[in-house]
Amino acid sequence: MSRAPIVVHRPSRTGGRRVSVHRHGRDEILGTAYSDLDLVVFLEAAGVADPEAVLDDPQWVEWRDGRAHQFSAA
Image 1 (cartoon, rainbow, N blue to C red):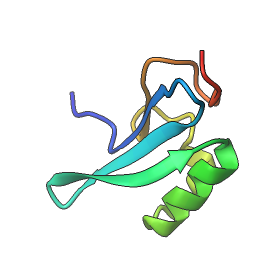
Image 2: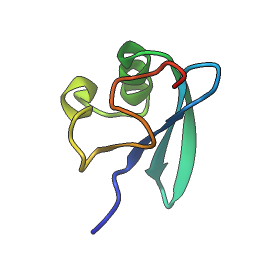
Image 3: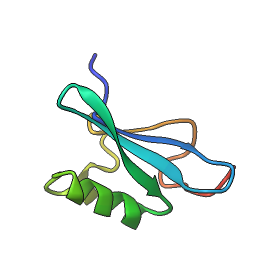
Image 4: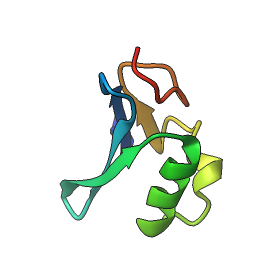
């Protein structure tokens, strides 16, 4: 099973989640998202055609160590 190309990492202690994308054979950090809107902006900039449609698709996005769409510190 292949992993999702987009990873939303665990929430940081101060809030926000690092976002990375696997492309061209390597992982690239897109930035720190503090909301779904931030995440959508990062994915648009990375070339994802309809980023809102893939946020809940596990073939596209892996939400690590926290609930999906939750960006505040645990």
